[in-house]
Image (cartoon, rainbow, N blue to C red; front, side, top):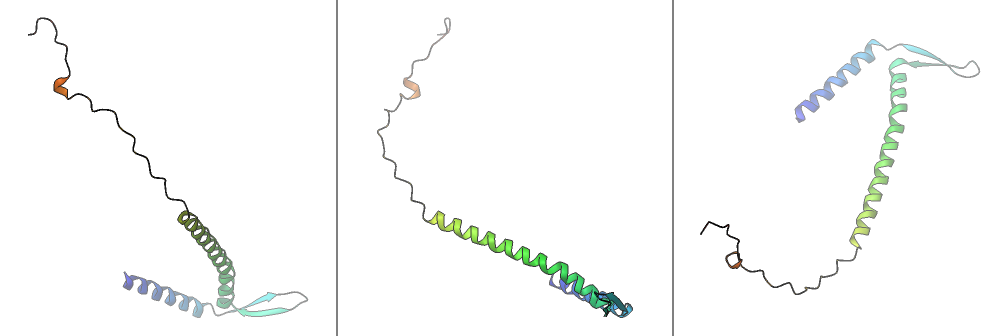
Length: 111
């Protein structure tokens, strides 16, 4: 399985390198007040990818932290719950008669 992971990441890095070499073009970005920025296309795509990935990772990290805190608080509350009170044994009813001692009805004609 580790080999497949390494193979996948190597293939992905190779494809990224091929894309970068094939698309090393300058792109004009028009900013305010007639300011123009010349940026290489692969760097622009990397920046836009990170602009979408980083906020998502921060949100996911915050949600996991909040859930971890809630779980820890619930575990602490569960640790302080009082143990159940012991039940007092009450005397039970006398044992019923054994099955052989119970009278049974016999239909007429059957001896």
